[in-house]
Image (tube, rainbow over all chains, first blue to last red; front, side, top):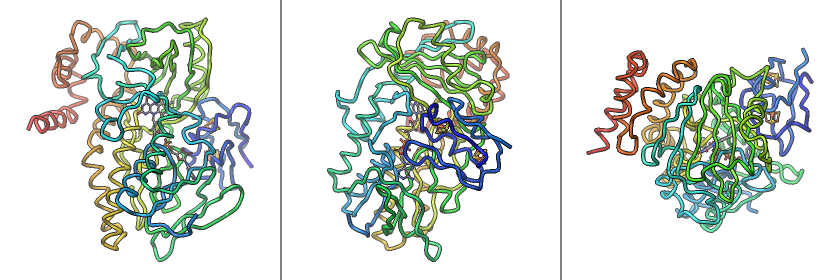
Length: 57
Length: 404
Ligand SMILES: Cc1cc2nc3c(=O)[nH]c(=O)nc-3n(C[C@H](O)[C@H](O)[C@H](O)COP(=O)(O)OP(=O)(O)OC[C@H]3O[C@@H](n4cnc5c(N)ncnc54)[C@H](O)[C@@H]3O)c2cc1C
Ligand code: SF4
Ligand code: SF4
């Protein structure tokens, strides 16, 4: 998996899900899951209101 | 729980609940599913809503109204203030709600109308057969299940997947989203009769800070910045800076975060057997970020059209196209106008915002129509007149329409 969500920071708002171009993210209930379609584009990390996401390339 | 319904609504926000209520009142069998275990929580909203529009959908109830505001005070970067009375600021102020209770009250209305509701139940996909959406795949308490329906209404908010599952690209670009953070605070000592807005690229790049009264000395202090301006610093960092300077002694009782679509209307919100409403259809206002009323308006239209389509036994886009036509007519024009303003506003420098504020400082807004406001602005700023010429044409048309 190419992204890491800091679940202690995340406010489970779903904003990251809306910008992910391949639709790799899912807000399950109170946590974010990413699937293999992630291209490490970094868009989710950029817009997260609290900076909870880290992308590794 | 049955395994077949006329309509399945995905998401129990304002859009979903009004859709479910409308359809159930018409006698259709309706299931509304919500993935959260508690409807309305956590809040992703500043909770401001226009009184006039709210009343079209539900009778105001003191149990979920926290504050009744008289107007707005808008501050430009150099501190100049413009005060707007309620009637013309009207769009997004009026009441400040308690969304947790408001959303639950709306869901309750749909239950009373006869809709079934399942919480802690997440849609994981659509049943699609012969090019038609025929139901929903879902997960309830860890168990997978399929429930069939004639029509699915996707009211699944900013994080919507329903459209994507049906081949509608609803993904947002960073420029199409305001990324937001908010503190519910005690001890700000604001005058509870007003909503406050603070503009400026230093404090909120291509966005604004809001302070909305919540009664009993509380306030929602929040910020939205354009996604394309976020990155090194995130919304919450800007908010902490503002609050640290402005309300160093106030206490934080709650943290809310979220995103608002500011993309303007998207190309398509229907497929065979499917309609999208509210934030899922990106129907929030690109300039204010308000989306509660539009979601309810769209929910109502979708509920009505679903009834018509099912009665006619034709749930193809040929009939559901009526929904698309209705919402574009009723709320789509305002959304598009706001998009024009947003596209200009996001590139404004602080100096430009200040000069606009100065040209409006001596104007008494309570006695002015929107048209007067535009005249005042345009007299002071010719470039703006040129940039907004399309809007101006639309507004004039709209105002004339209005008087008829
Ligand atoms: C910080 C912030 C401030 C705002 N301030 C205002 C304001 O002052 N005034 C205003 O009018 N608007 C405001 N908005 C916008 C407003 O909150 C939204 O436009 C409004 O909630 C949209 O309603 P909805 O019914 O479309 O979606 P939502 O209210 O988001 O509801 C969608 C529901 O669907 C559920 N869901 C999602 N996916 C699934 C799934 N797969 N299965 C089951 N359920 C699912 C979610 O859990 C959620 O409960 C603000 C937004 C933010 C983020
Ligand atoms: S945008 Fe950030 S806070 Fe919101 S759900 Fe995604 S990771 Fe969590
Ligand atoms: S890095 Fe890009 S592709 Fe990967 S989850 Fe984030 S937005 Fe999606």
